[in-house]
Length: 192
Image 1: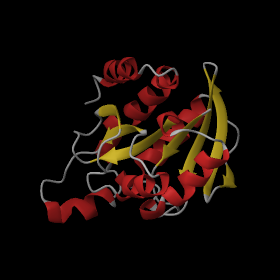
Image 2: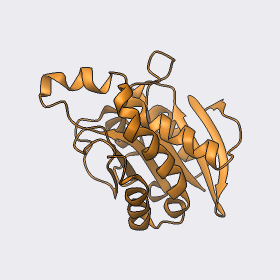
Image 3: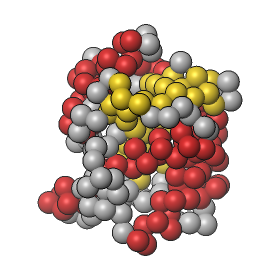
């Protein structure tokens, strides 16, 4: 079983914020691949599904971003899921809007959700699907940017990105991460 974690903040007031793109990604994947209904478990919302023969547990921590690891660690422990079978979907300031990069391990780069996961899992060696939201240009504007809602114009790249991610999810589930990134890039090339 794989554990796919969408990072975000709970509640309707956070639903459309850039910081919640991880929740949006999992919602789109779960809907497209007909996962079970979301239910409360592990201080979060979980849904289970099978993508091309690969069992996936989707988890949206409801602990707020800074404490995401408090939800991820118990889920990983309960199902005995090793770090290399965990994938976190999160917003990435250092990527242009709509760009996707998948990598294993690395630093948290100031992302409090990743920092919490690192601390609770005792390792940073899990996979990350980095979803570009762009940088506002100045460090003092970062907080307002990530906690700001996507603008209407952002939907031109956001919706194709989420749809492309759901379409390419079978490649991700199969461990074909380079092919997954390539497919998403091809599916979204006209929207950026």
